[in-house]
Amino acid sequence: MKCFPVSKKGLEQFKIILEDWIPKNASIALAYEDSYIYFAPSFEHVNLKIERKIHPESVAARVIQTRIKTDVIVDSTIFGEPYFVMGYPIYLDQKDAALIIIFPSSYTPVKKEPYKFLTGKQEDMWTPVPVEEITYIESLQKRTWFYTNDDQFKTNFTLKELETKLPEFFIRIHRSYILNMYHIKNITKDITTNFIIQLKNGVELPVSQSYINNLRRALEF
Image (cartoon, rainbow, N blue to C red):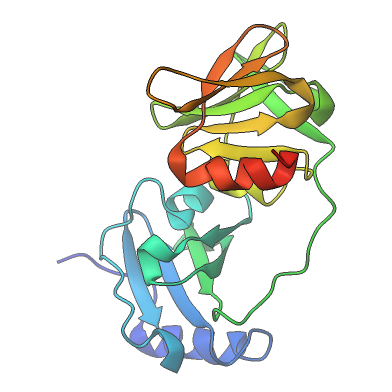
């Protein structure tokens, strides 16, 4: 049997302390090693089920791996409606763990100033890149890459996280792509009437049907 680093009584005391600074209808979870060891759902999340094992792409996994506070808007495909989730790195029994706060659907996070730079990695070198120079961002093989006219960089952010942190001239056009609209050369249709965007550097990107209305509204065509 797996031995948890905190007793049930200790976890309940942890919850009482947190209730002083989080909304009363928020839920609390603790992730330790590869599992959730505690989940206290609010009345709004009483039917919310969390798998015992931590999903490798979850906020909890990201926090434990990077040791960085992480927040993200989780879309409706997971909980039935969007929720704001925040994860904090903590230590339990001298090991990396994560405190996860699931806010109620009515909660509106304070809007932060959009990113002016993204820091990208190439091998063992990190480079801050002004967002204006980024042509598009791609999710490929469970990793996120962003591109300039001359370079390719890796980032730890997901596309979903970047959607809320980039300036408004970035737009999601596909489940795998976010585009800088200032780098669009033209928009055409292929033989199946799907939209194709050609960038000024010659790169072509598809627009999926689920995002075409967003693009039309943004560019008014």
